[in-house]
Structures are given as C-alpha cells and as structure tokens.
Image (cartoon, rainbow, N blue to C red):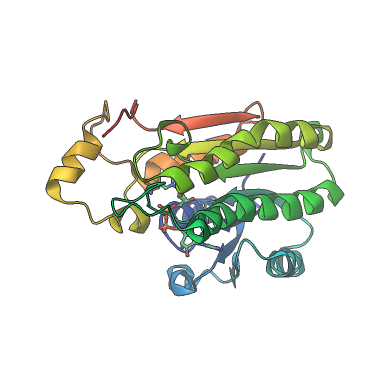
Length: 259
Ligand SMILES: NC(=O)c1ccc[n+]([C@@H]2O[C@H](COP(=O)([O-])OP(=O)(O)OC[C@H]3O[C@@H](n4cnc5c(N)ncnc54)[C@H](O)[C@@H]3O)[C@@H](O)[C@H]2O)c1
C-alpha cells in the first residue's frame, strides 16, 4: 500500500505511539485522521491542517466513529486505506488484592471495553468503508494495524485485565484477516514491549523497578522509541503487501518471566 496521497486513520493519535505514527505518515505525505478521546494532542498538528483532521472521539462509540469516518471522507474523499489502532489504556490490579478483595469487575470491563471492544469497533466501521472503495494495485483495498502488547503472552502480576484485552486484540487478527481477505484488506497486529510514552511514564517506576523491567530486554537494553522504531514498523507493515494475519512482537528480544 502506497502511503503518499492515501488516507490513514490513527486512533490514540494525540499521544505516544499513535502520535509518532501520525507524524511519520504526514512526513510521508499521507492524509491523516487523528482520533483521540482527549484534544490535548491537537496542538502537535498545528499548521498541518490541510493534511490532518483531528477528531475528538471515543473508540468505543459507534456514533462518534461513524461520524469521524464521514468527516474524513468529506475532507479527503473516499480513500481511507488504513487504520492504526493505538487508542488504549493501561490498568493494574490483581484478581484478588492484598486486602483479600476481588478485583473490581467494572475495572476489568472498562479495560476490555476500551482496548478490545473499542479496537474492534473502529476495525468493523473502517473495514465496512474500505469494502465500498475501489481496489488499488493487486486488488488491495486497505490495511488494518492493531496494537496489542507483549502482555498478551507474558502478562505480569496485576495485568489480568490488560492482558485479557490485549489477548483479544491479538486473537482476532487471524479471523479478521480471513473475513477481509476477499476484499483485499490485510490485518496485522503489533505487540510492543516497553516503549517510552506518556502511558509508560504513568507507571512512575522507581529506579529499582525500572532496572527490573529492563533486565529481561536483550539488545538494546532500553525502552523502545516511538520515533524510528515503533512508527517505522507501522510504515513497513503498510507498505509491504505480503504482511498479513500476523502478530509481531517489537521488544528487543524481551521474554518476561515473573518479575
Ligand atoms: N508504551 C508502551 O510501553 C506500550 C507497550 C505495549 C502496548 N502499548 C499499547 O500501545 C497503545 C498506545 O499506547 P501509548 O503508550 O502510546 O499510550 P498513550 O497513553 O501515550 O496514548 C494512548 C492514547 O489513547 C487515547 N485513548 C485512550 N482511551 C481512548 C478512547 N476510549 N478513545 C479514543 N482514544 C483513547 C489516549 O487519550 C491517548 O492519547 C495502547 O494500546 C497501549 O496499550 C503500549
């Protein structure tokens, strides 16, 4: 899939991995629709209004995402060729806490709702639009890239809700690929290790905890970078038509045991 001149939606594009993806797509001359729950990120796109549409919307809302897609078509035409689902939240809590109480069911539901249901909601609505659009070279209509996490396989203590949500994102990759194959739409998921973003910094790790988290990272032994590492993988997955139906870990060889 060519990037220049095509339209790509990036959810969670106001911060972290989504922001760096949106900026790289813009640098490569794409039209970008940034969807984020918060409008803080809007200022990052100042002066680029011709190629960017910033929509403040919740990924879990059918009405808001449908409206965002309509707005995108009005601004850039019926040319939505990709979506990168970076919108998501982190949540922490053991199934039974140190106080003996079971995990708040609403926290579990909220996490799964944003990370899994929200991702699926955007996928289904964007896919339905892509299906209507004219195919390009080799019958390709579009590409969907979802962000899971290495916690889908290596979930840690306190990550039961987050891991469940990211496991769902990873598991739906293949069936979505199979559903959309006849329309020339590819689906790939990325499972990042620890990346330097505002989300990761909310963990507020002590020096000791940081060392613990970075210990299982092989080479290079540091957190990943949104710019030049995560966003470059997204660009490759968009451009390489033979990448489909796969969950790719980007984690410098990290395999988390019990920390
Ligand atoms: N940073 C990491 O180490 C890491 C590792 C693995 C996976 N991930 C995943 O990557 C994705 C991006 O994370 P990040 O580190 O860039 O985080 P981030 O907090 O910097 O960015 C996430 C963005 O998603 C937006 N968002 C949250 N809920 C939303 C909703 N309901 N609707 C629309 N937007 C919403 C937030 O406003 C925020 O701008 C997340 O899904 C996260 O779980 C991050």
